[in-house]
Amino acid sequence: MINGVTFKANVDKYILSALQEDITSEDVTTNAVMPYDMMGEVQLIAKQDGILCGIDVFKRCFTLVDESVKFDIKKIDGESIVKGELLGTITGNISVLLSSERIALNYLQRMSGIATFTNSCVKLLEGYKTKLLDTRKTTPNMRFFEKYAVKVGGAYNHRYNLTDGVLIKDNHIGAAGSVAKAIQMAKEYAPFVRKIEVETENLAMVKEAVEAGADIIMLDNMDIDTMKKAVDLIGGRAETECSGNVTKERLTQIAEIGVDYVSSGALTYAAPLLDLSLKNLHAIK
Image 1 (tube, helix red, strand yellow):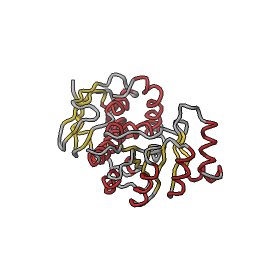
Image 2 (image 1 turned 30 degrees about the vertical axis):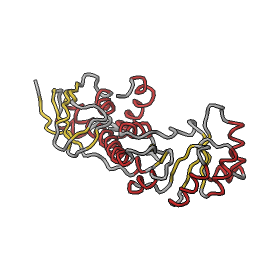
Image 3 (image 1 turned 90 degrees about the horizontal axis):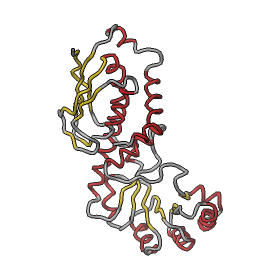
Image 4 (image 1 turned 45 degrees about the vertical axis):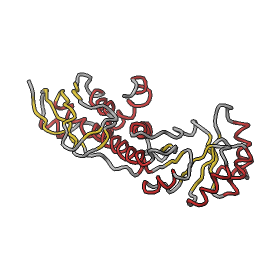
């Protein structure tokens, strides 16, 4: 469940924007077939097995339009669902149900898809110390929703945004002049409570990062043999993260090396939507 304060600060504005994108002046079709107010009920049905995520967001898509809409939802975020399962019913003004359903489903399908895909990856790491992380490769204006879905799927969030932590990447190193210089400058500028992570692409950069006192060393786009040598070279003097070309098929192989973290943008950009549907709308008295 998402905290109510979080909705006010981070969620409502995006949902309102999505609703406004979908209804610029009126819902012509709904207004044509529903010229007067009438109460109705519609069912939320799973059309695919998966992990449910985004129920509070789903609800908010309706209540931002009409606070009187009621919900009888049988599942909560993080629970498994099966194809054909009745997940709940939504009751309210039929016009509101019709006009809000697409946006509500867009969020719920997207978030559930990410949670489902993430969970399938997390299961591959069971028994290993390696933790699975997401990245900043998120859909614009969907980061809050997508990173929340990653957590529901059982993985962990990397930094939320550029303010959230120090991650010195290749272009930062180019701007500073060297790995050591970039780390030194970060130590002088960033608050002491922030860890400093640096991206490395070869063993020479790894050695330089260790000697400069990096807290976390990212092993970027390295082959398995080079990654093993890098972990040995670091020798526990910094935490390790594998990134770059991290596919679901390579996760177990990477975890066997013993890195602390593995980050994958695919959790958010490659996850397919989970098929969910609002069906059987009918009027009630």
